Length: 288
Figure (cartoon, one colour):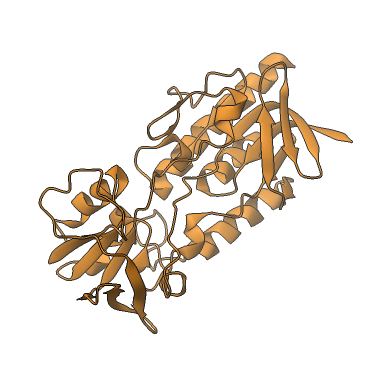
């Protein structure tokens, strides 16, 4: 059975929900597919987003956004999208469902890779972070490390240098492929991340122990293109390629938020989502 919507949005983070608020208020039927992988879920406290002087957790912000969309009549699906097609009509496939749409928005975020290191997952949001520009402030004047070996890791390290007392790069056995500007490099594999209620440091397999206030994950590339490439959507080094109206190269297909690269921040994602939402309304009404 095929279900048609005016708009389909993949991703229920700040970009996806912001777009949905515009399409729903314009009276367009809108389906939202939850990717289930938002990095915001791991954010213990957000202090740099408008309107929350006391801070808010990432999980609470996500829940509030989804509740707002649901109240406006959004169709919310907790199903993984496995394939999209944007030529000769927009089609979105899950394991059990096929949906068509007049307009599609990719707002899947930038799925950061992690590493199978004991203690790492348990301390996410407790000193282990996936965003230097978000959380580096909390570790000013203290030693931190970046886990990664490529350009993404080098960029995160540069954000931390003006704040931390020392920035160490942990390549976890990988050969560095970027210029880390003379920062200390420890290339031995990680044995474990240490700490109970909060991160205290790391132990390497060669016996080296490093005391840390913060550990920033920057493994691999911060991009989300697995759905875009098979559909023929153009991508670049940082993610999905869009113009100022958040349009991709496929008619009726838009992208917004972290999956387009650039500044990986909530404010930027929400702003791009608003642009994409208004453009989707214009597109659907032209086709009607």
